[in-house]
Structure formats: C-alpha cells, structure tokens
Length: 276
Image 1: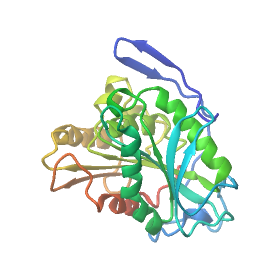
Image 2 (image 1 turned 120 degrees about the vertical axis):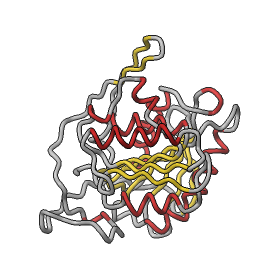
Image 3 (image 1 turned 180 degrees about the horizontal axis):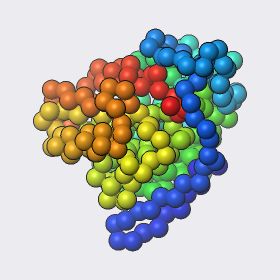
Image 4 (image 1 turned 180 degrees about the vertical axis):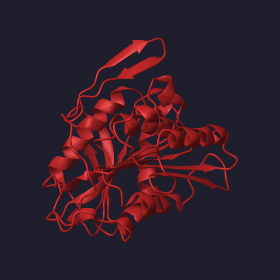
C-alpha cells in the first residue's frame, strides 16, 4: 500500500498520519505529460516518466469495477488510451448525494467529466462515498488506496500525474487529502468546497510538504464563497502563487458545477506534476 494511515478520534478531531517515502522533486521532462501545450521543461530531454505498466483492464469507455474488499467504483477510459503509453489519472469525489444515492451520483459525476477526459486524454475514476447521507468518511480513504492499486495494476498510469477533484463535501475532503498527500498527487481541484474540514482537523496549507497546485471553483451565490475567499488568502500567505499554483475562479451561479469547469480545471493543472 502506498498510503498507510491511522485515524484517531478526539471529539471531532481527525489526525491523519502519513507514511510515504520521501522523494526529491524538481520539474522534469515526462514524455507522457500528454497534450499540455504550456508545459515548461527545465531539465532538457530527461525521461522522468514513472508508468505503472498495468495491463488487462477493459477499454475504452465506461467501466464498472470492484475492489477486493467489495467497493464499487466507476472508470472512464478515453478512446485514445494505448496500454503502451501511460496516461494521467483523475480521481473524482461527488458531493453529499442523500441516503442510497451515492452510487448514482458517482456515475453522474463520471458522465459530467467523460468528454473532458477525451479531450484532455486522462483516465477518470469516480468513487462512491460510503459516509452518512451518501457522503464521505475515513473508510473511504482506505478504499481510495485500494482503487488506485487496482487501477495501476490493470491500466498503464503515469504515477507522477495523479489528480484529485471533489465537489462540496467531496471538495472539503479533497482539500485535506490533497495537502496530506501532496507528494503523491500532482495537483487537486475543488468545486464548492473550502478548508474548514481540513483546518478543523489540524491540516493547514502552511504544513504541507510542498506547494501542491490547487484550483478552486465556486459560484458567486454559493454560501461557501466567503470561506473560499478566506482560503485564498491562507494559501497565498503560505507561499502559493496566484495563477501559477493557486487559482480561484468565481463563476456566475450557485452551489453547482458548470459544464465548462472540468475543462478550465484541466487547462490550468494539466502542466502540473507531483515533482513541482
């Protein structure tokens, strides 16, 4: 397992412990960076790709899969997928779906992203929340670990280019996971989420191992907007740079994900690797 974690409860406090091998990071030339026209290389023609070399998974199109522990998840494999060439991976966490609706919501999220996966040439994994009211809890972190192990076994994934996205409650969690596992994921994106869950659990931008690129998108009538605006200041004060590794997009609308947002996210973080 590439994530080993423990969870201790102290009232509402969650303490995540990360045990991941330390790595030295610098911007690298990775052949499988794919379709990222603004990528800038500083190390010549070095091949720093880290493919998983997985094989045997069904492709292309929609795939339903199950972990060894029995957790279902949903995949989309672009028509351009070639098992000989590693592809980036985007993990998606839906918002609170309501009791009994998480499975359908995971499929709906995959459908919202599949055209963008075709254009951007990345693989989608849409996970199903197992928390109360179709949301998320600590057990889903272990399931995510199992899912990524499966995906890397059955598909050729560029392991330095794995991304996270979450909407609403999924976004709250992704802020926490993105910062905790900043050395494992290339970048992460949030829709209609904010830092309150992370900071309430003692996870802050100032404490991350690297300045992982973060893209935040939120509606101008979303009640979470003031929190997201305060989050922007916290990231910038911690050393993030606006329009380089931190973006805040405020669109016209409410607590939702406009159809163009996935493409805008990818256009900004496509150039990001986990060796920033």
